[in-house]
Length: 117
Image (tube, rainbow, N blue to C red; front, side):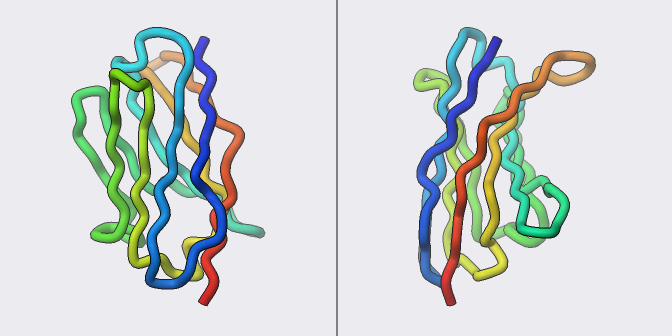
């Protein structure tokens, strides 16, 4: 069982930066592929960034060059560094852990990010 707790959301300004953290409980954090999703009001949840267990990263086109995902396996934490924020980045951001294939997946409760213009 893995529990994920996001933090670091809040109010940011356009052009500014925020850093989100997702802390995991339980063991074997290093085997999980980790993901950040977001969901804006009235929209579907979308994948923002992902980092594999081996550290390979991938980003949605809308955030490429502005957001950076990283992980610290010793701290069982994944981060999302967000820079050059835009009002359209406003959403609830969720962390997800998945072992891949038919493995289990876990979601955090989400953290609100609001970007003012």
